[in-house]
Image (cartoon, rainbow, N blue to C red):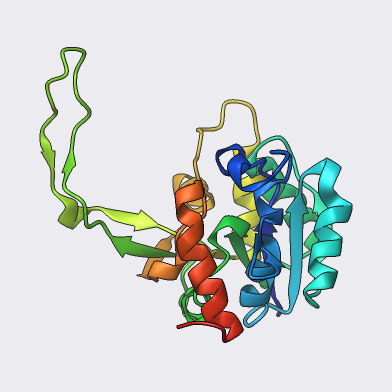
Length: 237
């Protein structure tokens, strides 16, 4: 049995365009403390995974490979698809997994997730779950969406809600089956891998996430990302 990982880095990252002088650098190639975001993600996940595939924008495969080489990290880079689901499927195919292998599906945008969190998802699958995901309590007050007249909706009990992070970890047979069946015509839409697997009857459990597993999405996320990168490089606390 091997522990493998698919890291999705095929998004364009248009909300981070301001971080690139020409607005053309994909999110995964945004540099933090001298290292591309995708390289940080591979470095962190390599603590627990022995085989890693990165899905990259088709026009930037070489650039992603170079960014990984510059950071001294090793992963196979393959072109991603038009959707996240298609990219994950491409990564799973490239890994050529056996049914009893374990695979982590991770977002490069969550590059700083604690390796201990990833390890906890692996242990949950080893203990018998079909899949495991990191979650965090929701700290904001929640309400239903306002109506057309602007009147707010009913309060939502945040105690019953959790925010989902990655990596989302599965027995390989579960991940492969979920993505195969999820790609079939008429399959229910899913925003993440766990939702796809759970809709097909697989048992998915939760483990505690970490605040460093946040998703780098907007320019306002970059100061925190830079701070963490400097901390990991030994240049800050």
